[in-house]
Length: 230
Image 1 (tube, rainbow, N blue to C red):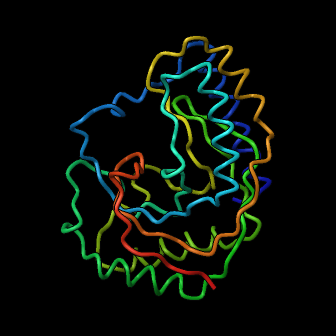
Image 2: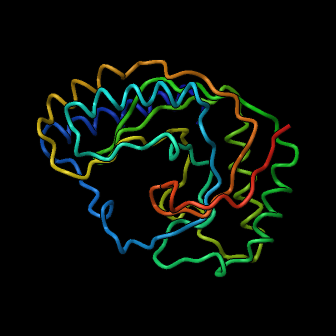
Image 3: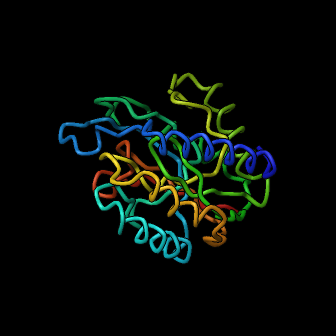
């Protein structure tokens, strides 16, 4: 998606989600507090810069005042997914895949990819999450995903690339609904204040490969390697 298409897509998501939340049709994540959740996967991701994280934290602190029981991503867990190499499934372990071959395919694909920038501007939503909108300044992210999909399709690894959905946005999930909202109308009014808030711009010079749980929680996430961009 180009940024004009992203803007339209984010707007559609937001309008549909707010309508669902206001009318009590939002969705709760019942797995967040499940101690036996062993869904794991492998993800290629981008970490936001310190300045962007700081602005997101300030936003989350505002919402947390009125809805303290929801799940707010800590700074350590904030990320933008480039591609789900192995989408999270129950019981997946690293021994289930040829990790060396996975790393080699990614290395070869990203070898000539240049650094790029992403503007994090405004928020959007789904019926279960609040997300920070990302707008890449160059086409690098789109090309990166396209080339990686092609490279893995040509391999014999049989991995679950894009098993949940084909990723074509640049958002970051920062809030997940896990308890009934105390006041859905007030919640929507608060998040709407940040609909066009400028969270800052970040230059992406490194892509990280991780073994992760569903929520990218720091304590359950293992960094496998990183790939510097040109």
